[in-house]
Image (tube, rainbow, N blue to C red; front, side, top):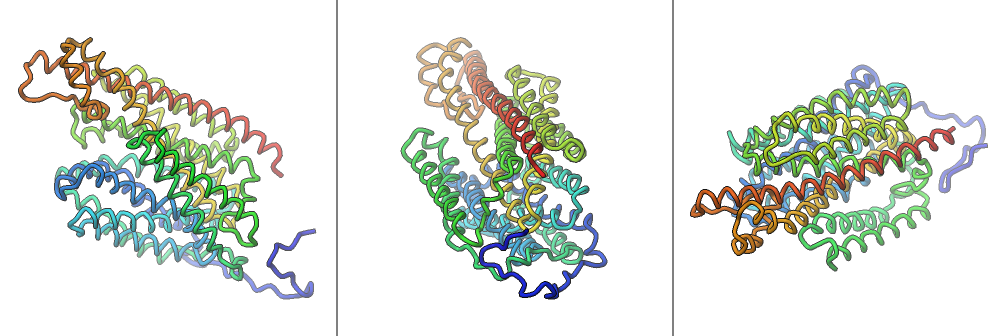
Length: 532
């Protein structure tokens, strides 16, 4: 016999009429048009998340910004996005996913134009935070709408295409950013969102149906939950993004992450005690959903962390321009195009217990092949791990999205989408910060030895230790006055120290991928045995 949720009202008699739910008609009845519409917004947010790294040097030169200022160009966006993603999904579930998707697209577009017009680094940082907030309204409702309009048998394929758009937009960021920065200006990196945003608004207004959780209309909104979740996520993400600068064992880093974790625990306790929670804890009773959330974070930990140091390697060690470096990573994008729908088909047939471990295993292989990279590796050694990484990322995106959003009730589709997007953003922030820290530590500890081994005199090598931060970014500390032989030795030693750091980072990432594959294989299989 079905139970009545707290705060709800049972019908007074069995014959109480139930008003019919209006069904979308015409263009709004076509789920594939819905998928096309949300792909516009998703592509815009995904592209913007990775394109800014290419524009940052030009922003710094044009606006006379410090390195700390440029870090906040990225961090303000990331903090606002991570803090509001679950809220954006909940608002869509309750008040209309189409409404908040359109608000998100409009706000993101306007904030993008405002960044280009800001004229100061403070304005850029502020409008980047606005971009992040509106992105948080947009992203979770893309998956929420797909969950509402696609039948279960086709939802996996829809998620596969969604994952493909997300992966490709992230991977294409360096190429698009490089072309715009080289041939136009850094402002064009943000202005390009204007035509995409306008097209997305017009098309979405015509084809998107309104979907919401109508049962939640009379519920009290969980304002304390919103405040606790935002505060906890802000503290954790802030500690993560500052960990590489402050040191992972510093009081500031540990205090921010530990304090944020404590607030999140308080949030979880609060959610179990309210009738209408922001994030229903019952969702985590499904092991596939819980494991899918963890694997989503690990997937983007590897993807964004690896892309970050690969771009440093291609540009600073190998000397390619941003566009040349971006073109050389195209195999990653193309592989993800193939893997996302393939992963969706395999997930539909065999479940995520096959595709999640397979995708993580492919990423582990990609990482360990990179252990053979040197400062002079040919492109024939580079592209195979790009293909393996793209295949793994695309497959995991499709299967983890199905595991998270597909295992949530349709009424909680937006919240589940926000949960997955939050895991994705935190995983990406951790990947960039942790892997860069590993590279920095290993490059610094081996720099003096590599320099002397390359033929640099001991006193000179010890003096160059002060340039270890530049070496950790792949930059050799050479000056125009150095003799030719000494200059070549400094370059060789510095690049070898950087590669030592890269090898440490990919070794750790590969081990984490294997652990993720094992957890997914064991845990999701159990979930499928006990699932009704």
